[in-house]
Length: 333
Image 1 (cartoon, rainbow, N blue to C red):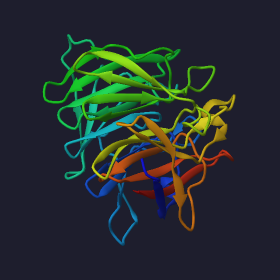
Image 2 (tube, rainbow, N blue to C red):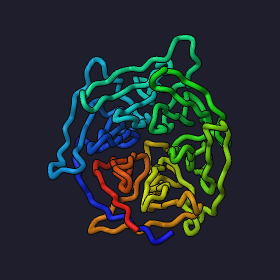
Image 3 (cartoon, rainbow, N blue to C red):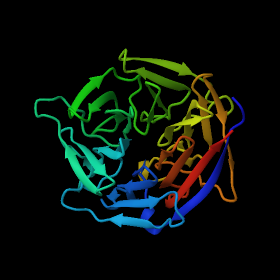
């Protein structure tokens, strides 16, 4: 794999976007922000904030919540599929408990700027409410949900949700340990999982790979020394890219040595970006270029724009401040 760099462009910084434990999803040329907190354990709002990514006008447009919107929440997870955005559960309410909605998936239609709730049939088994889980899609008709924090402990389960049938299926669980703050991505028929926090330490050194066709997992090990591969971390991101027609995975930023205060305090935040060549199974540290570079952060969110760019938003900085910036990282060989 040739040397890869990422050119960093700061698109916007806005007070209304300051938050952590939220989601940002890209649909078309727009990014949509939902959920999160400005103060610890206080959901900021349940409005949807949109940003035009390929325009000279990078102001934030906010669509106020309506009676059909999901409740305000932190630590939710999102996936995009066929131009729509899907979220599941999270933490909220007076007790800041996992939001139990009997397996409901929320669907946001960016064209109509409306929410719909996709409820599975009453007799179906469905995943437990949780926060700090992760989601992705296969790009066709299925969402994948993994891990997170229920009322107590952490989970290692894996579920799929068929949009058309509104049907949950429990899949083979991922390798131990159960964890929160982990990340998944779907590339060329396979689901990839890495990073996370098991209650004692951050996970690293393994890229776990799930085959839906075989309903089974394998694991690829690497040295998590910051030279041959990324160091262990949680509340980071894992996203697919295509460069020169080849598939890659990118993991970036995140937290190491978490605060004893959980998300009420900041641990060691990271500012590094790593890219994995799926065919060659080699990691490379990505050089960041630009007049200004993103601050170290965890508890943020990011999504792919097109084939070769990543949009990064917000999160918790190392001085325990919630960030309100949006960055575009263009990857070049």
